[in-house]
Image (tube, rainbow, N blue to C red; front, top):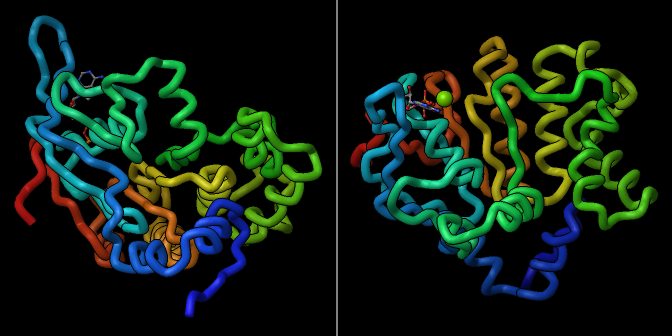
Length: 256
Ligand SMILES: Nc1ncnc2c1ncn2[C@@H]1O[C@H](COP(=O)(O)OP(=O)(O)O)[C@@H](O)[C@H]1O
Ligand SMILES: [Mg+2]
């Protein structure tokens, strides 16, 4: 029997309804590769020298994973997340996101890929201070430009409720705590029902209790909605809550 779960994310509903048991078991066994990184090098020019930020990274990420890149400052975590997030392209090697080779794509298509398939959560929240919680969360849907006001309203209210901020929906970011702001960015990242959510040190600006709550919320969404999460951290307290740790050092992924 296939369990049909009604979720707030329409694509997820379709996935369950249309694809039946094989996809269900793929999700559960996490066998569908969603990110493929092959022999990736990234160099940045720094004055007259080149900095080797990534030195031959090979990594696969499976749909439904909850994975953390863990390594000291300067190890290449942000650089690697920027590749997966199509914010930057490798100097050499290939990055495939949901089958798309990002090194071969035009800027316009990369922008579309980012908007349609990826969600971003940042260390410093990156919310727009003059906009309310509602408006910040609605923003990606406005950029997509395909929903009516009523459809957007329904989506925004559901996801804001999901992250526990209904009471604060009209507030501005500067009227919220750090943990609440990060919940707003989680809602904003999820509103488009992305294939992958990327979070660069999402707990770095939070106290440890709040940091754990944020990781737990991400984990809960990962388990319930099968959204793939990859985030970076050098915080040992959050590492213990992650099912897959990808250790990175000096631009190389260490043997696991
Ligand atoms: N835009 C850039 N220009 C020059 N060097 C950079 C740039 N971005 C990152 N680096 C260097 O690349 C290395 C990896 O950085 P980064 O990916 O930010 O590490 P992490 O996120 O693990 O702290 C570091 O040595 C850093 O100084
Ligand atoms: Mg970083």
